[in-house]
Length: 139
Image (tube, rainbow, N blue to C red; front, side):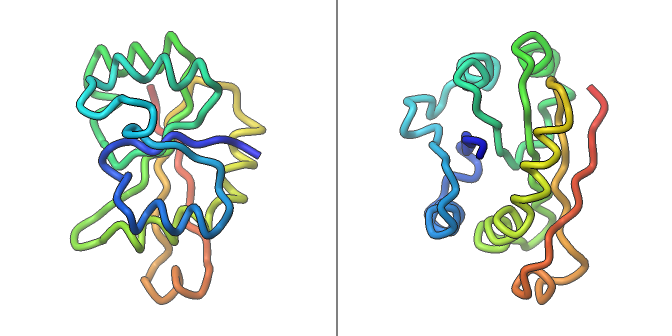
């Protein structure tokens, strides 16, 4: 099973509580002392620990130093698709529902990579336990 690093933008109580309840192995930016640190600083450190980064941040592939940090450290990034009006509880449920797909993707694909985890069609689908879709993003 993979270990996940939860970026600052997702480390709220609701998201993390859902992961804890589902027995997901994770740590947070706060617990590792990376709160407020630039992404390009912590990305290689987290990647060096073998963790998969989980973030709501869209800019990883657009900010040169962050993209380079992912490429050179062979990072693995899951970007949860937040969308308008979607809170951390829905994002957390979708992540937990999709964990099997995430694990399978991580086993099959050599890093570096970034994938977007989209939500199923409706919130009701998320509450029913349906997983989201993983879409690879070009680096």
